[in-house]
Image 1 (spheres, rainbow, N blue to C red):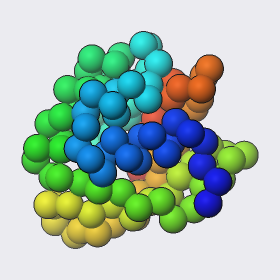
Image 2: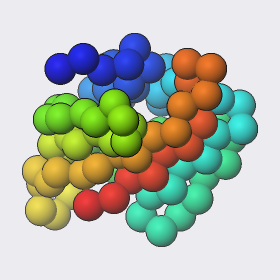
Image 3: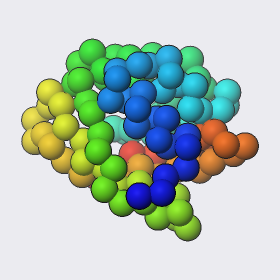
Length: 105
């Protein structure tokens, strides 16, 4: 699968539970929408993923990517009910970084 480098970096950071590297995949003004909550900017994104890493220890395995729609479908597993599940990551990129991410089931 041919993923943009920033998505490959995001996957690696997620699977290594590295919240700093994960946040570095985003622009300074990026927005993440997940589980009905909005996280604005790199600092909030890092705090959100750090908490999620501690609570769920989530790892992701990319299944398919639509370059046209900028949507990644990935199998996500961890310490949560119903694991594993397939989630859709809806990206908007800007200057090689993630500017917006919406995670849906």
